[in-house]
Image (cartoon, rainbow, N blue to C red; front, side, top):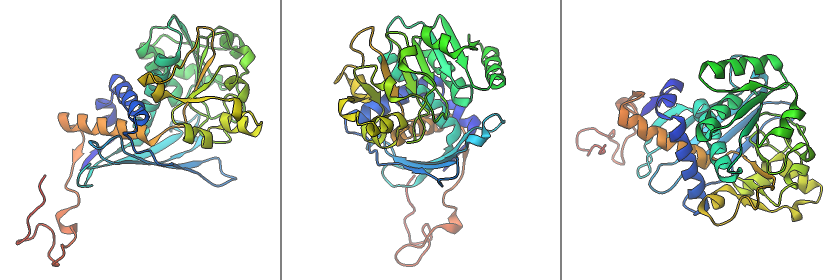
Length: 349
C-alpha cells in the first residue's frame, strides 16, 4: 500500500494532469461509464462544520475510491485549510487497498482544475478579464488553474477580508501569477468576463444586473442547500444553468434549491458539463448569453484524480510503500491457516 502526503500528491498531480483527469471524469459520467452514488454530506444544525464522504469509481479499469473529510469555516484566516480530507484507493479487480493519500491537496487541485475545464467549455472565446471572489486556498488555486488554461489580460481577486486578499495576492505574485487586489466588487463585476466564486457565502455576493452581457459565472462554494454565493436571479439570467451532476445539484446546491422554493425550477433548464464536453448539448448559445456553472463536487472527480495520482506515484516511485496488511495481521483462510502460511498459495502481486 502506498502512502502519499501533501507533498507527494502535489509532486505527481500537477495542474495539467489535474485538468486532464477532470475532463475524463465528466465525460465518463456523461457516457454512463462512472459509478456515482449519492454522497454523504451534513452535520449538526447549530454547527458550521460539515462532514462529507464520497465514494465512486471512474470506470471498470480503475479501482473504487472513497474520500472522507471535514469542512471547517472557522479555519479561514488561519494557517489551516478550511477543508481536510483523506482518500483511499482500492484495486479494481481484487479490492486490495492500493493507496492512502492526502485528500486536501487532491481536492484543492481537482476542484480548480474542474473549473478550468468548465470555463474552457463555456466562456466566450475572447474572454479576457477574470475575477476571483475569495482569497482562501481555493481562490489561489483557481487563479493558478485558470491562468494556466487561458491567457487573461487582467485577473483580479476580491475578498471580504482585505488583509487575507492582500496576503494571497502577494503569494500568487511571488509564484509568477499576474493578479490585482480588488477594492470595489461592483466595479470589478461589471467589467469581468469570467466570475469565479470560491467562498462559503450563505447570501448572494452580487446580482444578475451587475454582470456584463456574455459573462460566465462559476460557483464552487454553493455545494450545500444553505450556501448561496449567487441567487436564482443569476441562474435565470441565462437560458440554462450548467452543473457537474444534475441530481446532486438539484438536491444540494443552494441557488438551485432556492429557485425551487420560488417555484421557478420548471422554467430552469439544467444541463450537465459532461454532456457539453461530449457535444450532446450546447453550453453557450451566443456571445451575449450569461452562462452559469455550479459545482456540487462529485466522488467521480476524486476517483479520476486519485487514480491518476496513484498511477503517477507508482510510475515514479513517489510516497512510502508498506505491506498491507502486515504479515502478522493477515486473516486465516477457510482451513484456519494464516494467509501465506505453508500449504497456502500466496496471493500474486
